[in-house]
Image (cartoon, rainbow, N blue to C red; front, side, top):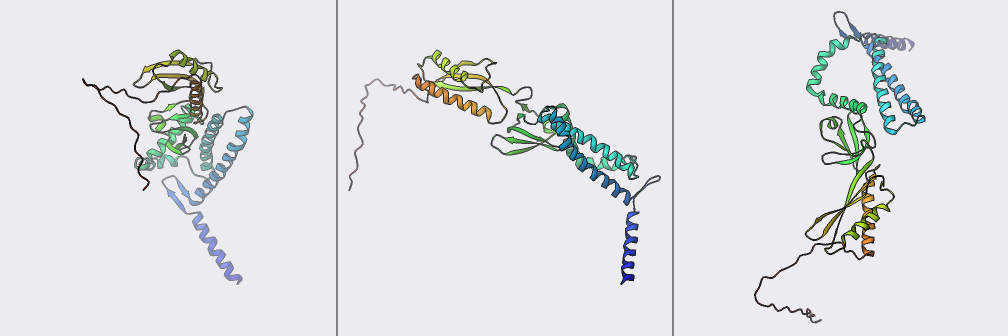
Length: 307
């Protein structure tokens, strides 16, 4: 029994030794064995785990103590990880006995691979790095794309995650933000200007309408009074006199602006009702072109028999 076990162990050791020393790449002056690849991968995997722990805990704590914002935390962590991963690869290969010059040899094959299918991936990776360094968009920004509006929740290596106003998440490739038109509502400041339109009936006192709309805006706590609040008599409409209330408010969440607009409409409606100002509704004047007088008769409809 001992002899069989010893024989099996000897066979296993021999097979493992053969695999461990098996050459995977050979050139005129370079030979890479299976053992070197395993050692390099082990160093990289352990290093990645350590880098993530440092990035998530130690670096975050240090930045929080200094009062850094969420976007600053994210940017520093990403840049730290990018540099750390690059240094990790450059250190792991020599420690495993793999020369850095191997990448020059494999560069041609890598370029062919890029030509056949990796362009989009590399494009988004590079775009993600540019987004982090130039910061045209940041976590928490409210952006408007072609058909989407929402708040940026994460800037990843490949794509940006946006939470729309209806709660649905949208993933947008990083390259889109560098190649297409993007409206960033909060790039420089969270203060944005908005408009609430109201139509009142013809014959309403226009100056009174203006004063009541200004009163509604000035009483709202989330309207920034550092900017001018204006009421413009916009137009003589088909069915109403149109007024626009222009105001500034600070937006930190997608629903903030809609809530402020809703509050203003409630307040304006209440003030108009107290002052007998009618909010207009569609109506038409009918003119009958006839030379003879018309007889108009209005009768009640007869009730049908119960039987």
